[in-house]
Length: 411
Image 1 (spheres, rainbow, N blue to C red):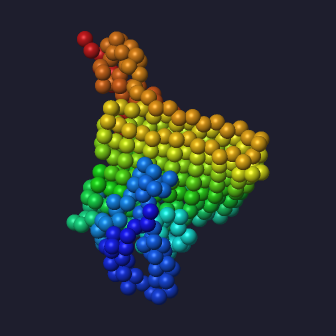
Image 2 (cartoon, rainbow, N blue to C red):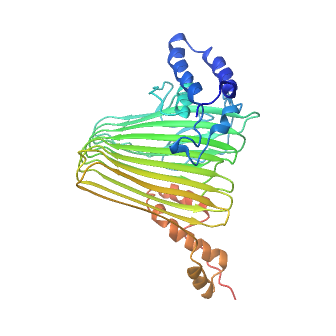
Image 3 (cartoon, rainbow, N blue to C red):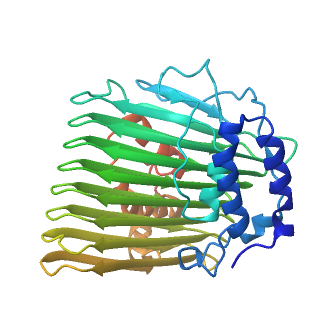
């Protein structure tokens, strides 16, 4: 359903002011993108991929584009890593130690109204390009910090990661917020050459008033390997799309995630793996911890195109509802157009095992500690995939599930 023109009037006024500062050459393609946004507006429940995550309420919001930066401290830099730091979409030179930034960005055809809005306003961001047989010496931490402004504000960025044949890199996309009403959109274009290896972490701990939309489009060449791990900890409304195309034979992707959001948050993960060539492998493993007054959505889809024989694919989704007011919609999906494949998928939704909890209590372990032990055991399959020690420690601390629990025995 298209938005009505009057509903998007505030965005039109903002774009007019923004476009007036651009050159004619810069303005023309962005005006095309903004016209596409006006034609569609924000996605709503009438679109199948947004059935449980209606954004149409944003049509009449008044977000001011961020034009200034603020001093935010302390900044949570991880040790033994290079860093790029953005505050409200603006690069911060002082804490940044990496050169992988570009002020320019490409504007591909948009798929949704959010894509078009991002393309119309987008500023540059991460531009990581490694030549053949090059390995990034240190992991790269890219921090996107949403800082509260006096008025509701928005920022939009586009990013690109391109690894040449046999190149290797580890990158962390680190989203956080300190309050206020903000809209942020980030789109990442990932291209892996033959035999390239990319480990990509996406960690999100936005403030309750934050709306964050991220999308990662990855295309894998022959024998490339793409490992992606996402962790959602906070936010008001969070939508993340991960689309992986295994374009040539021998490509492999392993994607995993954990969502354990804060109270009153809405987190939606859409993951899709497209097998476009034979002899490719994909794995999806997601775990959800859904507590009081929170809503989680997960859609995992595998598409096996004609000719993609010897495909090996598996999806496993498991959720724990920790409150009667928690809600989850989980859907694994398969579309298979080849006959020599091995594909499996499954989704479960349950509650904390009261028998196991009672057993731990019977051994004298305090209730809150026993509960934490069971939750950690449930999340461990995802946590064990984090091979960056400092990052794992930080996530476990945020989840209140440290690797060493202090066991208090009751009298």
